[in-house]
Image (cartoon, rainbow, N blue to C red):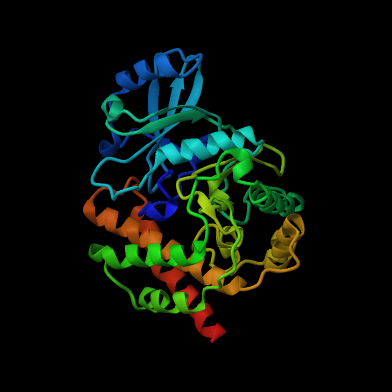
Length: 367
């Protein structure tokens, strides 16, 4: 069985740099590798590849460093495990490659994976190479630059894409062993609570301590199993260059088999967090932006997935806010250790307390 998402510590981040809009820089000092060795490997493993190869690093990415590869044969993207000390099971690029290949075969929008390398001697860590998808990446939940009459359609396309993912039978697409079945939410609470407590270098906070105690007492026991993305946000997908359509979903590091409603409510967090977090919508005028309300977005997902309603929605929201805060807590730990893969790690760490405080307020309001 594949390593499970619950065993992937300190994952996730804004890895969505697979488009010109993502922005590139020179390869950072802590991510450099032997370009000639990569070029030789691609010549032997990537169909149609022709060098010479040039490399830039995408500016985004808190977890697995991501690179733009340019050659006469085309443009590609490489994702690799980061340098430095890693926790067991973390940064599982082989899982990313596997799930994308399975979903591409099922007709879901993901980049085409050309090849996976599990030989550390090539560039110093495992990596995979995929197509570079040309389109638009939005880091701001208000869809800046999109005509007002098209914003609602873009938001709806995001929800429709997630509903489509949750429509797949994992067994039918070759992912029946992609995670552990049953008690997904409870195991997730245990996993991220343990990770938070164990990373003592990053320190503790009163709000996260409260949530670690509150969540096990309020988590519902209902069970469903689907492939879940784990980090489904606006900045982890590429939209068509001109149409309200998602053409590629990125950053599958936290994917596994799990409860689709936990996955959906992670996406729904955008309605609960402020615009100081770029994808947040809580303090924005949705009507003026021509974006659906939270209730409308939930209703559309329910209709697409055949649900009458979502019970325990706020509990799922609290968990997801907690989990994202715990992920950022891990990024803080990596930053303090000197192996965070993005120079923007400090800005993301500043959001940890905001997320934890919102989660605690929702929990306390529930009683």
